[in-house]
Length: 218
Image (cartoon, rainbow, N blue to C red):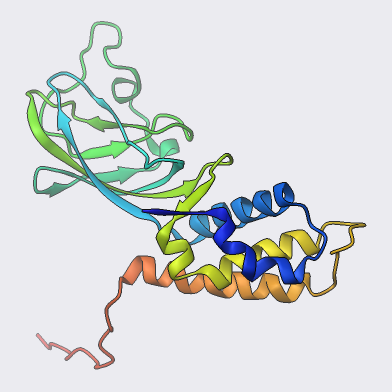
């Protein structure tokens, strides 16, 4: 589910009197994008079929959202090792057959992106057989630059933080009627909310135990 950008207006407009609607919407989108990229709070889990002899698969993004990071990939019940793009140093993994040498076709153990952009991930070894819903992909997403709506969680849980980010953007714009030195204060509110959202994205909504683990002696 998602909400229109204008639901953020009551939290923003009183602090930026005179800002036009298009400018405010742009600031909301920019703040939401930075918030999502910095916190990874918007996450989705999806499944994808494995296809024999095919090593590349697409991550589908929710409406008006774009892929930020792939967080986990499983092949059946086994979690794949996510390899950073620059650490993929096998020509067979990068392009397939090389000089008559074929890539390995077997159960995938690693996943990676061949380039730092795009939403298509690769796996290696390449699956040797078809398998329905073999891949489970957990990924984080951010709004697109043209988004007219934002995920519910950004308003329901983090409206004050994102509104503060939008206000900071607007108030730091030079030579406007709403330019203000309080932009830095709003920026701190935004950064604090983003840090809290990052913690929630990693830990979930659980209360961590404060008890020390017992030390086991050999």
